[in-house]
Length: 324
Image (cartoon, rainbow, N blue to C red; front, side, top):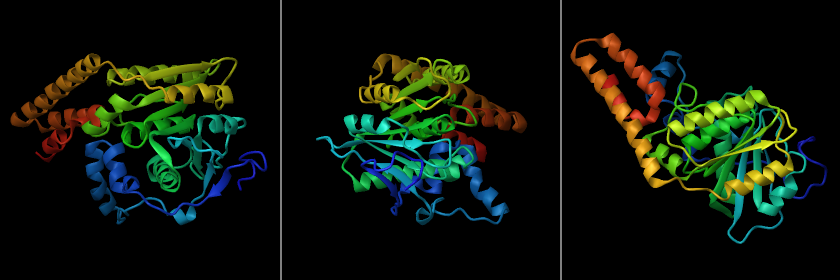
């Protein structure tokens, strides 16, 4: 048991070891979903130059430990699941959260050695995916109520996971941390996954009223999400709170919001998607014009800008142009 994870004797708390791997946590799949297409395409050449091969899975589960809390009673439709990415090395169940998890029938799982110092793509993201996969294999979990969350730097990782894996996580609890999407740090996933994220993912931002820096980050993140046609967003400000993990009352409000999504207006969503697709097509056409005119430098520069901004939304068209 992790010594400072929770009060001694808390029912349902375990130091868990998992053993099953998912194809969704494989290196190639992580790159496809979480990196831009041009960056992902360059990985084999980069690894070849460094004389390192790309292993199938980035994680050796035999070396990993997870903090797992399971409520005593399972809801009739199965447990909900919250995979939590912490900013520190030792996972913990925050004080007072267990009672809320019990009321909502939510399993909580968090990986060890997955703090802000750990590499997101090599550790934090695959650990969260493997935690979700193994818990769902062991327990009766409602797949429609699987969520990813995090605090501070972990919240930023949680947003990346929600964006890249909307077929796994149907909501995200973003506690005091958020980033814009559609840039070098948070690439858009392939078009089919982006559409699923827009259509069916619920995002809940929970931030203290005195945490001015993160509230400003939240505002930028939400503005970016709306530009990319993501509208099911709930914002909650906790009074008399700074940069600290959500209180039990804030967790309860967040879980209620996650379990009551609001599907976006179909016409508004389609108009937004159409506008972004038009912009993308215009820029790809400009790259083709540069190539036809022999302006290779201009074509490469614009193509990399497209790859950064539109990510997987531009593939496979961006990859075909890169080959030219």
